[in-house]
Structure formats: structure tokens, C-alpha cells
Length: 503
Image (cartoon, rainbow, N blue to C red; front, side, top):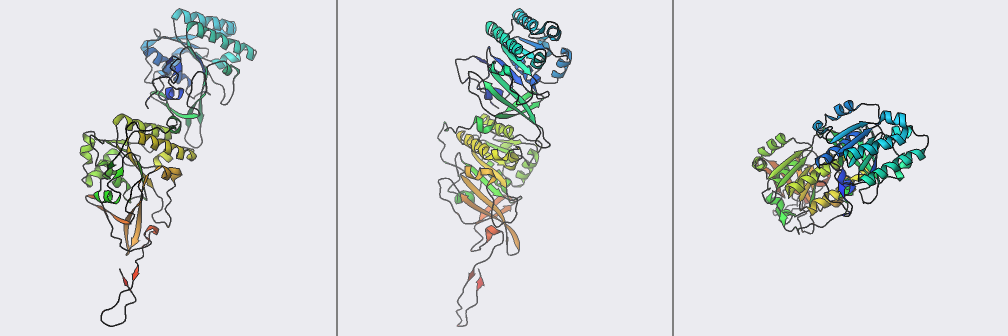
């Protein structure tokens, strides 16, 4: 995702962490000359995160001192780090200098360790220190007072030599350490296993001198290192006005549907297309994207159709999707149906819309987001923030939502509050009529616009979707079983009138 490039407090100099997504949470990066504790049980990613900060500092021309008090030798640590794309062994030891302080701590205690750190920082002229092993230092002390004095001494070194510091500790989750009250910031890494999927989080517990995005944020450990996915409702929680006044309408891609909704979808609005599997939601979205252009670039963001299969499907209707995709007027983004992270999906979608100037968006479908969170209660806030940002970016979007029931007396369109943030809504249904199965389309609402509320028949033809008012006076269509109205017909031959004739 796009990183914040400037501090929210311009008077405090900062440096970038090099961890995607983390600087956005920190309000622009870490404060120069500050001391931070990075806390988390073993395996949560502390060492990887610290090395990412190191190499980002090196890329900006700095030098780093990495002090360990662990029994693990540096060769093993370097070997483990080399599998990550950001690690550059050629910078060792010229820009990244490793020092083992295990024997110093064992033989001389915290006072000797402090003297060694001061000496090395001054000798190397470093402005970033990583101290990996605060837990080990704590175990060597007789009291909390000694450890607090050690942290105080490190702060003195930081102030005098303008050296930023990350102190890594393996303290258990939710443990409040005495030294946390002394440092400028505390960043906690955690791991949860609510079901089969292991979920990782980062949370800023404390950050002096700056605002930050509160709460837990999802993170991953990838081949590129730690990647943080800020919560959508936290980073885009404050609805903002669009920089441009978006007016006019965008064609749905189906002329008959445009006539029903007043000439197209209002610009920069969100449409929900609700219906069961196979009723035509994806094809409806492809029609909308078929009107993509250089002025109105389109994006298909889906979870079910791989790009090749999607293009093959569109090709069958001769919608011209191939040409749009080939020349860049249409972008296709497919998310594999594996372990998904809700905020990774949301941030990726917003980044694509912003970076490519997307004006037409079709999301196929909402369930792909819902399956990406262990906390369904978040979804209403998530979608409210997501759609607000899409509107501000001038994107006219359509979201497909699958309705489980093929036939139902009542349509369930609550999807954790999504229907409340959609300005426009379409209902697609199957209906049994005259012993045949047919498709129905109904326009339920269009923002600030008159529309035709009559039920329409939706047909899938070799050239795509066709919409026509062919149901006449039938009733019960929304229940899935139609009933023709009985109309009394007078006879003209002088006989008794019929009991009725089906229209």
C-alpha cells in the first residue's frame, strides 16, 4: 500500500521503517533519536522487522550497529536472513556491524554492557542501534531497578549521540514491563490461532510525540519480510470529500438497463447486485466494464474467475473485453481462494484504484472479503470506510453479492450492513413461471434518481444480457413462483361469460 511520506508533526524529524504499512500506522515513520521497545514472543517476527529497519536506514546512507546478547551466533542469524529479499550481505560489516555482547554481559554485567555499547556507537559513528536481547539482560539483573537504570543509560547514549534504538524483547503478550514507561514507544507483535489459520498482528501500544493508528493491524511474514496491513476503518475512517466534483452518469453497458435507471449509474456511487449463483451477476459486471476507456479505466477485482477463464467467458458474449485488457483500459486482479486477510484485500483494492485512476470497478464478490476476517462484526465499518474512499477517488463501483437461496419468499440483503452503504441496488432472482425457470431483475434503488421499479425479465443470450418487461401482470415473482392474474372477459356472442382467462 502507499506509505505516508510525511510526519503528522513536521517539527519532529523521522526516518522510514522500511516495513510496508508500518509507517502509515506510525504517522510517518519512527522518530529520530528515540528509543523503542519491540515486544513479542519468539516467532512473531521481531528480528525480521528489525533487519528491515536496518536496511532501510542503510539505503538512506546510514550505518547500523546490531548488538545481540543471545547464544545464537551471527553466522546463523545471517543465514536465516539471507532468504529474505531485502537482506544485502554486501553491506556487512561496512554499513551493518554485528556485535555479540553475550560474554560481556555474562562477565561484566549491565554496566560493562553499557560501556561496550557506548564505545561501539561512538567508534562506528552509527545513528541506529538494534539491541536484540532485552529479555536476556533482564534475566541477568537482580532487580527491576537495575534494568531501568540500563534502559536509562541507553537513553542517555541515544540523546548524546543522536542514535535511534530498537530494543527487542520476548516478553509475553499483555505483559507491562517497567522499562516501557521510560521509552518513547512500544510496538507489540502477536500471533493468534482462532481456527486453523494463524493470524499475525502488530499494535502500537505507545508512541510519544506523535499520533498513530490505534488498535491491532494484520501483518504477514513474506519473502519480502514483514508486511503490515493497516485496518481500513482506521486509515480511512474519516470520510473525506472528493477533490473533484463527480457528476453525470456512467453507462451500465446495457442500453435497456440504462433506460430503467435514468441513463446510467450516478458517477462515484456504489451499486450492489444481489442474486443467487448463476443468475448473471458476473456477466452484468462484465457489461459494466465493457464501457471502460482511456478516460474511464476499468478494474475487475474478483475471487472466483481466473483471468484466462474470465476473458474466455467475456469472449463468448463478444463484449470486447479482450481488447480493453490488452491495451490497458481494463485491469484484472484475481485473488486466489486461499487464506485471505481482509485489510490486505481492502488496501490492495484502494491502491489499484488510486494508482491506475480507475473509474469503473466491479468486485466479484463480497464473500471474498467476508471470508478474510475472523471478526464479522468489523465488516459494516470496513465496507463503510472502503466505499467512502472509493467515492472520494471518483470510482463508480459495483459489488456482486451471492444470495444462498435460489428461491426464497424473502430476499436477505443485509450482508453485515453493506446494503446501507450502497446507493444503488439491483435484485436478480430465479422464478418459476409456466413450468419453466426464468431470471428476474428488479431495480430496488438508485441514488437521487427516478427509476423504473417494474420487474424485468433478464435473459442471457449469445450477445450478453437482455432485459425486457415480459412478465406482464404476473404476481408472486419475488417469491420464486409466479401467478398469473385472473381477468374477467365478457363474451360477445350473447352466451354466459367465461369464468376467466389467463392473461
